[in-house]
Image (tube, rainbow, N blue to C red; front, side, top):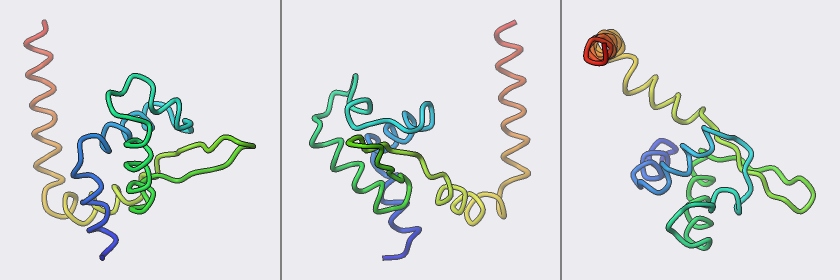
Length: 108
């Protein structure tokens, strides 16, 4: 399987995207910390983390008995460069600015 295929498959699941969002908000969490407040079981979180590790989206580091999980943004950046930047960067930037301006005008 191609590396990008593994990344796309890993990102296709909402639970895995939520785990990545949690690591983006606070990197270096243990399994227990990642499980806090989730509806899924510890075993399900472990399975999702293994898929994320397999896609190189999560890196782990052992600190004593604790296994810390870290977001690896490199594969997502590769997707951005290959599938977004070269085709849509200018248009997306303009659309994002329009949306931001619209939201600011709506709030004010």
